Image (cartoon, rainbow, N blue to C red; front, side, top):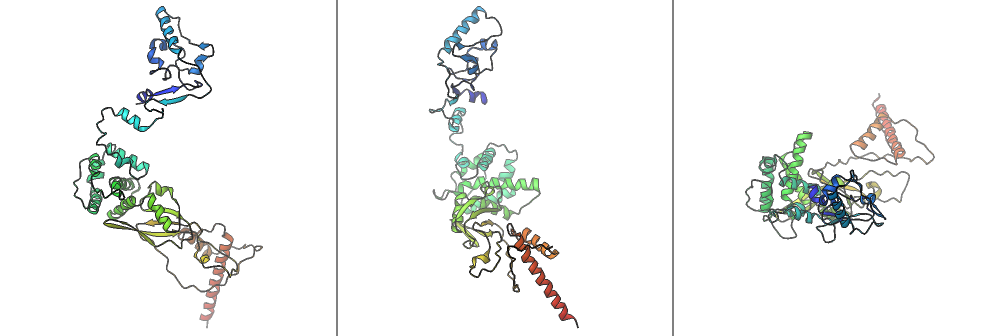
Length: 416
């Protein structure tokens, strides 16, 4: 394909440092190697650039042998053609795409040039591949599926049990009668007339692509990671892929205090079990769940926050209740198809804690109980202690001392 592509590119010569004298089109419609093949064979400058062969005095042509009488005439013809060249300038060489009026390369012009028979221009379902709102890698995967680059695409994407369950799910939601075609190309071709519900509701266009991407991810998980998901989990991942677009992430984020950004892994759909976005505030405006309503169905998402713990030391009688919540000003929350567990509240005995002064250094070894609780909070509860290591250690040491005192008091009570 490269020779055909290169034939559509001409060079506007500037300094001549990047344009080959013989091999690239810069004078006329074809390169000089094709116009003068006999001179190209005996030339000693087959790979030289224009800048290497041009000087203010004229062209410096070098040949490996003395010219015959008929070859002298060919050199004269070459020099006559080179008289059209005005000379080099200070601007760099610039490639020009000949199939565009402004000389700029666009994929559309190259596609129409390559598709000379125009067989697929009318029926090729390109809008359901490149015009839907999915990540670029998912669109490229769909194009490969349509082009049958996957050997087992029929069995795994159309006719296996899991694929049949997914197709039946969405056919029932749309309320249409559907018979599975033989190929993925026929699926997209016939799907363009299925399920249209108006310009404001275009999620139905994503259904084939989302089904195939979900099956592809599940297939990779089973083959390379040994993970097998249930049919219900696969259906929920496919629904999440369809209904959770970047626009909906922004809407959910604004509803929960103000959208800041969406995680890169979520944008690329590298995982289908959950999504993560960052919002403003301390998490007080984040509800437990949100609902996405569409004709015939309601998609409910459970939300939970991921806010790092905050520790305040010293007596601050004027502190408000927001200190007890913890969390920074920019919290993270994510949704999942499965419910998230929440810790049960327990009654705790009041412990008076005196914060160490700025001059005091807590220089003592933490007990096993303290170390184990620090590890537990860091690993399981995802509590961050960055910037508060000394205060955290002092707090847990006070709790440890209080726990030891209670044990000693209980032993004294049990003694006769």
